[in-house]
Length: 208
Ligand SMILES: Cc1cc2nc3c(=O)[nH]c(=O)nc-3n(C[C@H](O)[C@H](O)[C@H](O)COP(=O)(O)O)c2cc1C
Image 1 (cartoon, rainbow, N blue to C red):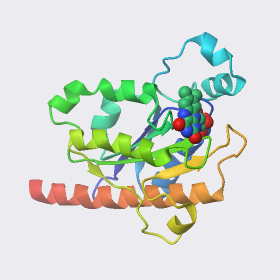
Image 2 (image 1 turned 60 degrees about the horizontal axis):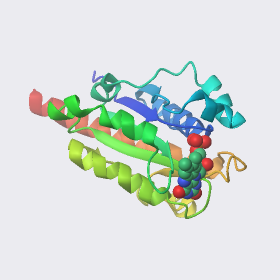
Image 3 (image 1 turned 135 degrees about the vertical axis):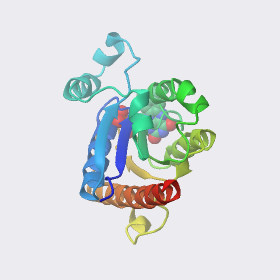
């Protein structure tokens, strides 16, 4: 029997929206049959900044039990789903810093031939979600990764409207993750697991 697809959900979140998205995508990937790791990247901000925003401190406390991401979490996985809040239309520095530690693994070719996908949230509509995901996906080209975005592959994609990845407008924490976004996460996770499974089976066939 073939081993399950291994998925790492690796994310950054300040105020909890991307934590919620990460947990949702992880649960959906498990439902799709994957073995899943959820990992948060290391926080870089000083305590003074975190304490200036109660939602930020609450998220740090609530996620203390989630392991901090390491390079092995990427190398281990057949598929990696990265997530970050939109920051000026780009990914957060914390996630970029994690990605920038992957140089040795990149150099050894250990990041190539895997499936990658992304998710994000922003405060405002048209606030840069697509540019954030495209910025993330630029890096994946350098990895030699295989980008599996949801596309318009399911009827629900015409409702959430983002073919680049799951995204949510949180209105500065005023709009919680809703059914539309949860459905987007389910569609994305299922597609990632399905494609990564096919790729894994093909690679195993070539090796055999
Ligand atoms: C430095 C900074 C830059 C941000 N840039 C944007 C932006 O370009 N567009 C936007 O709509 N929201 C922006 N936001 C808001 C966050 O993207 C938004 O609140 C996000 O959903 C927070 O996710 P989190 O709860 O996982 O941290 C920014 C927030 C910060 C702190």
